[in-house]
Structure formats: structure tokens, C-alpha cells
Amino acid sequence: MKVGFLSREYPPESAWGGIATMYYTLSHALADSGHEVHIVCQAVGGQRDFVDKGVFVHRVGRNPKRYSLLARVDYSIHAWLKLREIIKRYDIEIVETTYWGAEAFLYSLRRRTPLVVRLDVSASDILKTGTYSGIRELLSLKLLALLEDFTAKRADRVIAISSDLYDYATERLHIGSDRVDLIHHSIDTARFRYVESDIRGRLGIPSNTLLVLFVGRLEVRKGIHILCQAFPDIVRNTSGTRFVLVGRDTNTAPGGGSMKSYIDKEATSKGYRDNLLFIDSLGHDELIPLYSACDVFVLPSLREGFSMVILEAMACGKPVVATSTCVAPELDFDGESGIMVSPGDASGLAKALMKLLSLTEEDRKQVARKNRALVESRFSIPAWVSRVVDVYQKALERWHGQKHE
Image 1: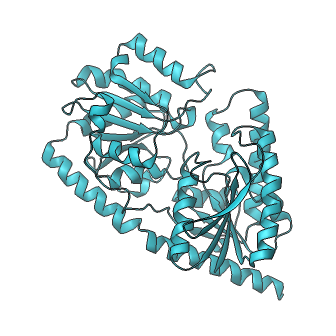
Image 2: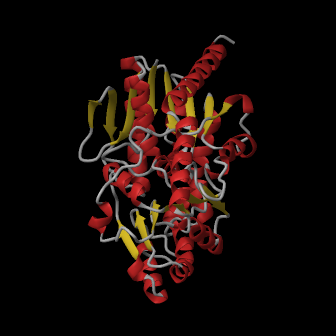
Image 3: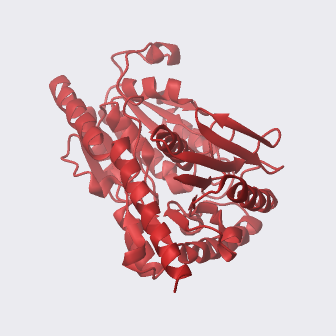
């Protein structure tokens, strides 16, 4: 099958989040399975076409600025033109795109192949959590939300990556259940696994110090400001716990301005600044050792699509604390392998983290085995690819059926 992806985010130049990681994994898994895969994505430093380990990559657009409306318009036009070109040139049979950013809005107006839209995080999520700065960004997000919904409704099939998003598609967008498939993301378990390293030493964290890890942008939607409200209780009730926050800063702090500066001031005023370490970003080669070195992984998001980072941490054998906004409700946490709390509940986060930080060494070994086994059994790449290809086949059948009506 010849597949075309539209995803502005794609590693390594424009690896902005989970969408980038997901499409990188899926495109290479499909190529390894014998399918021809083309991906249209954001150019950084010049437009170009090349082949990356069997995947045809087409980088387009002239403005890579992430949160700029003009940059998104520039990319969207170039992506649409490139998609039309490769459909004709390579006989692309099906196009898949992410819901976020209304990537396929222009293409959906006059499709040349079946279109599959994958529901993930949306502009509506950003609006509901106030993860924006200024009136211009607010208006841009409102327009983007309308375009996202329009594009999804035009799709031949929709992939929902969680039960919440399945309900959103069928109930909020009123897309018939016969056009929606629930398919979780997958991760490369050969890559994400426990590894020994000296990363604690390089970060100046003693081996006997408890380590809580957060990975994600420092923004309101990720609930990082709520997590910081939980830190003082943990510091008072545990001995020397360190908190490592990995992620880029944003201007979404309560009251406006840098979230990193906001957290820094809060930590200083409440006496836990020495327990806090910021890391702007890490590649997977460094992130996997850090997952492996932590004692508990936490994701306190107010709204999420799926949260790949939860599975990545679990694949490395770590217990997790997560809110009920992502895949967490579907993981059957038992209070040791993981704990789920309500979004915005700082007290619940503190209690859950302290409980998991108190696990014995034997408990941790059992959690590592259980979480690793769960990820391997339920989120394997071969099963994922098979289900995705099945969706493509259904979309093709619907497309051909409509053409003959």
C-alpha cells in the first residue's frame, strides 16, 4: 500500500511532541512491513526531499515558527501543494493526518484519495486549559478548532487514540461509529527499556536520592503548575527527593509570562528550589536512561490526547502517577504499578507520589516486571500496524463504494 502522511511535526528537525514521535514510529514500521510511505512535514533550514531509512520525507514551508499563525498558513499551503504532487507522482492510495492543526483542511475540500484523520490533542484542549498567550493566539486557536472539526467530519475514517476521544468523535463531532476506530498508539519496546547509566551522577543526583521525573512542555495544559503545588508536601515528608522537569518553557504561567520563571519563584518562596532541576530538552538516547534512573514518573495534565510518555516510562519499568485525561484510565493501575488522580488535584498528586516513593525494593522489581509486560502485550508495534492497515482498507472500500454509487 502507498501511504501519505501529513504531519507538521516530524523528527528530528520539527520534533515538537508526541505526534512527531508517533508518526516517526508508524511511518518506519509501515515501511519495514513493505508499504511505501511518504510524509509531508515542516522544513527547517530549507525545503528538501530525501529518504530516511525507507521512508520518503518531504520537508516544505519557509517559516518553522511553531506558534505563529502565519507560519502555519505558510506550511499548510506548501504541504497541500506537495501532497497533490506526490499523490500524482507516486500514486498514493491513502492519506492520513493528525487532527491537531487541521493539517488536511485544504486537501479535505477536494480529496483525490481516501482521508483518515487521527484524533489527538486539539486546539479545543488548548483553549479549555488557557494554554495560550494574548488575544491573537486566542483568536487563532478558535479558528483552528473550527477547521479541525470540519476536517475530521470530512474524513473517510477517523482513528481515536483513546476511549475519551472515541466518545468525542461520536458524541461531540457526531461522526457515525461505523467510521470511527479506537486504536491506541504503540511504542518501540526494543528501544524503550530499562538501561543502566551514569546519568544521575552527571546530573549531580546521588544514587540514594529519590527522583520524580516529569517530561513535557512547561505549560498550563500539562498541569505543571498543579504539580508544583504538590512539591512542598513531598519535600516535608520524604528525605531529599529531587524533581527533574524535562521540557521547553512556554509563556503560559498563571498571570502570564514564563512558566519556568513562575515555577522557579514558587520553588524559591516555598523552600524546595534545591530539590528542583530543569532540563530544556533531551533526545531519546538521554531520555531513556533518565526514565530508567527515576523512582516515579508523573504526568499531571489537565487535558491530553494519549500521552506516549506514560508508556515510555512504563516500558522502562517505572511506576507512574497520571491524571484521568489520557490513556491512564485504560491501564488498570493497581496502586503500585500506577495511580490515577483527578486533573487539578494537587493534594491527590502529592499523596500518590509519596505512596509510590515509599515502595520497597522488592515492590519496585515487581512493578518493573508488570509494567514492562503490560506495554509489551498491549502496545506492540506489529499489532498496531496491522490494525492501522485494516483502517486504511476500510477507508479505501468506502471511497470506492461512494465512487460507484
